[in-house]
Each structure stands twice: as C-alpha cells, then as structure tokens.
Image 1 (cartoon, rainbow, N blue to C red):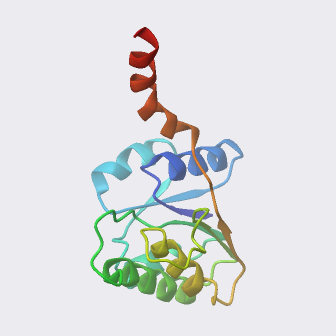
Image 2: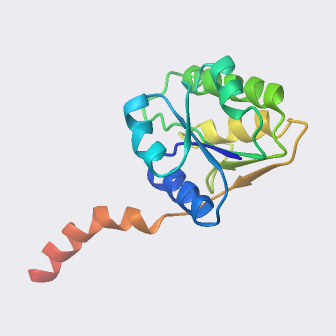
Length: 161
C-alpha cells in the first residue's frame, strides 16, 4: 500500500496512476471526500486528512509501505513560514507514528538556497523530514513540462507579430 498526498494535483496524480498501473494498492490522502470520490472509482482507498492534522495523517499513512509527500504550496507565507512549519511538524509526527518503510517527498532545485525565498519552505521540509528514522528521498525537480503551457499563449501571440 502506498499513501499519496497531493493526489488531486498533477504530480500526485501521476504517481498514483503509475502505481495503480503496476497493480499496487494506493491510498488517496485528501482533505475533501468529494475530491476523493474519483480516486475511489479508480480503485484507491480514500483517507481524509488535513495536511496539518497529525493524527488524521498518521491514520492515513498507517500500514503503508511508502508515502509520497507533496507540501501544499503557499505563495504568500507569513514571515518565518509558520503555516508550512505547522504542516511539516504534522507530517513528521504522522510519519514517525505510522512508520512506513520509505518516504518520497517532492522538493525543488533551489531548496538549498540560503537567502530567504519561497523555496525555503521546502528546505525546512527537507531538514525536518530528513531526520526521520525511515529512508526518505527528496526529489529536487527543476521544472515540469506542464509549466510551459502558461507560456504557449504568449509565445504564439509574439510569433504572429
């Protein structure tokens, strides 16, 4: 069983679909039962948990071989990132309680930057979850091809001029 957070988004959804295609059991960790319904229809078990609710996350992660963690983006954080720190603390507590065999976290290239910027939320996640007793892998993606869609309209307009 693999528990997937962020399953309703691009990356978490791809992770889940790949695992399902390989006949693995998948638990969709969602905040909203309505969003979980489509994943239940795809063959996933659904667990309801807010990302800042350590007890609900621990139940969602319980019995899993692996957990995929995607920190919810916060593009307007308070100074010191208290919102992200609260979620990271809940994730750490839940993972320690559930003890999955492995954890994979989506991070980003630039998470190592020392100057204060939005990417430091992922640096904090790497530091905190990197201290867990089970193996944790941090994927530092540089870019996703889907992000190019935002630029296509502008590029095609410029090409016509």
